Amino acid sequence: MAKRRDLIRMTDEEVDAFLHGRRVMNVATHNHDGTIHLIAMWYGFTSDGRPAFETFTKSQKVQNLQRDNRITVLVEAGEAYEELQGVELVGTGEVTEDLDVLMPIARNVVERYIADTKPEDIDAVAAMMARNRSAIIVNVERIVSWDHTKLGGTY
Image (cartoon, rainbow, N blue to C red; front, side):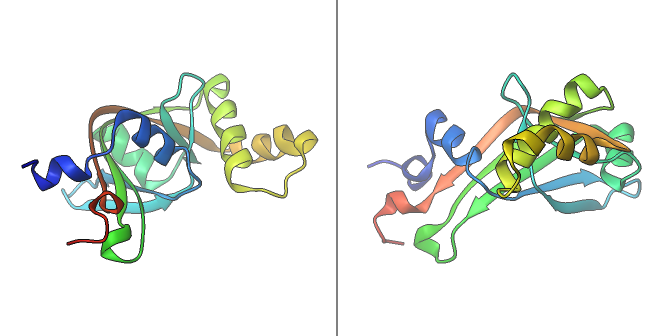
């Protein structure tokens, strides 16, 4: 009989589809005192498909990643146990202020989360969002996933 963990693990294709949904990413970095800084962020993807987000350059998460680049992010969904789905990405956070990297991520965030933006305004909104900001790219080293809907309503 298959282990329960194996039953609920998502395939690579399922992980990709789940992450490309319009969800919130919980981002965890290490503070200077060893505690965890945890914040919810909208996110997008780099041109080569890596998860990424933009944030103020002076934010705590940027300061933390410049000191210790370890990052764990969680994207999850569901209210009841039998609906719970999630993907945890563990790796390193790459911080950059390079506009050639930042702008495509900002554009992707606008397209994914600001639905009423007219197509001709996306670049302007993304440029406004990119001011005083950095991109953080999640370089994934390990993926943990679960999809309780695969259990067919059982515990």
